[in-house]
Length: 178
Image (cartoon, rainbow, N blue to C red; front, side, top):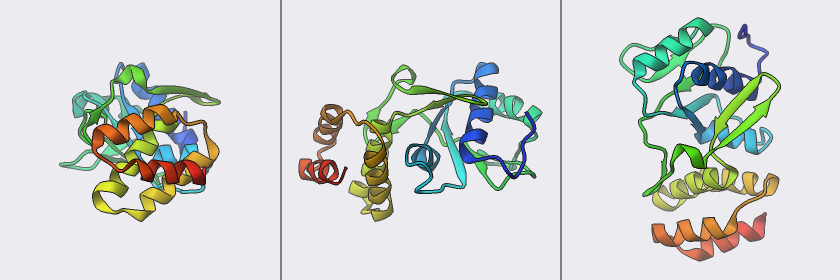
């Protein structure tokens, strides 16, 4: 698949995710890229955060055929034909203190392939963890956007908040806004 500057974030995520899967690299899209997909681009991210426990050399080998170049000394990859960057933050996949196994994430089938991605409920956990721990209001707004466009497992979200020691009223308010 030829990458170009007309590709949407979702299309690029699919091409990257499919290439990683085909190379045997388990990687899950999270962060702003997942918010963009689940909010129908109400929030536009310019990077794709994939969490993997695989070695960065395996990731590099999987992405080189697509034309991605690893920035020396870090976990970022860029491509001359797109403004979107790819990042591989250190795993494991977690939201606050809650570690999430790979088999509890989703696989979206899209026209250009697949996207291994956190669930809408999990990305809300991610955004709410940022809001709770760092008072990041933008993350709270992103969580609201995801709630308004997706089915959410409220029971799981309340359990997560309780386990994290967060006020359940924050989740109540989020539910009301959805």
